[in-house]
Length: 284
Image (cartoon, rainbow, N blue to C red; front, top):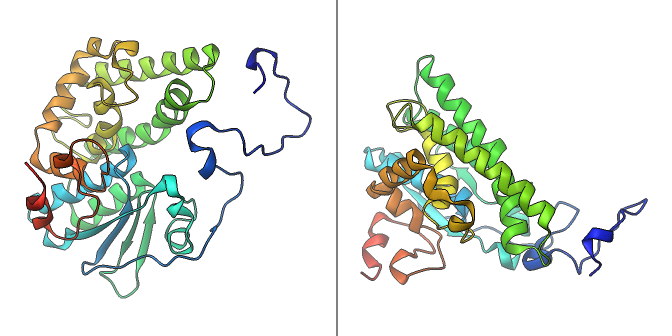
């Protein structure tokens, strides 16, 4: 690989499949399916196809929180999509999410199935469907949605930006790591200032805004993301740490983090979830 300090972009970019680091085998410059593969369908109206990355955890936490509130219609089947194996490029998955990213949701509860893709859209869809975790009056609703969309716009700098160049890129590029580390620390400061003012992002109540932000930034300040806690001095963001710990104590959040998880302690892994009793089968 060439020295990045002497790289000059060509007049026309071409795809070099040898580049891309750890995820080179699944990154490509075109969309659409690579193979025919129907998706399984379980017994519940809500069918989730996902993996316990931060974006996937958002949705399983939301579903477990809805069930904890007594919304029996939120029962769901969670099917594992192994992105390292390219399962997100199967024809059935692409039919649900043409962007080939997890999570993707199919709602079979109505006359016609409804597909929902993009994690923020799924959170908003479920909140409106069940009338929960989304304020109904202003200005609280506007605050909640603002932080929800803040996460959607900010997390790519943390994940595809900082996370990629710090943890996954085949070569370490000082400029790229410095640029994205600076931005991630700025984002943490944004959150820290907000959480100094209120217990949750939208105010006094726990909402989908917290569920969207927590799997990314909560994991980051607890040293669970990219092993970058010391590098970013995350302990300095004390209000974010307090908020992250507060959500981590919620039983539904604890369950949601386990769903579609295939790494870590065996007691933390529930690769597929088809019934609430599946959690009882995990080793202690």
